[in-house]
Image (cartoon, rainbow, N blue to C red; front, side, top):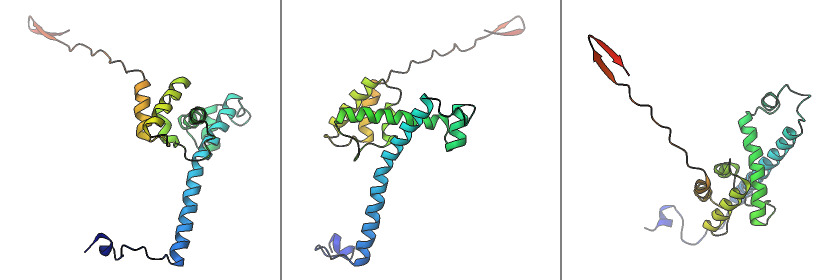
Length: 174
């Protein structure tokens, strides 16, 4: 018994039913909406940057942090991630020569590039694109390229272990 027989199918494709076509169309619409989500996140990041850079929040809140929290239910960290993503996507546009309207890395995939200078982001994205065969860079390719450009974390010197010395009926810890 073959693979297709186990599934109750023959190797020849069966025509789709009307119900299956409707389901496919609904699911494809959801995929298209999901793909637009990256653009929406990028636009949100651009808007947050403008709000922050021009202090357009000052009539609404006492601080940028409280503005983000009260107005959008965002932590300051999350707001800064969105702002940084918008910046990285601008670099991605420059590297790919596209307007990033289709098929772009997600905000999560781009996070490893956070904290890098713009030139290093461009180099990392170029490398990730090459590793991905010119297609949208995979999160793994981005992480790998970013890791090469991040400064190595310096090891902290371990404090010396305390020494105990017995002296004339007492213990001294040095």
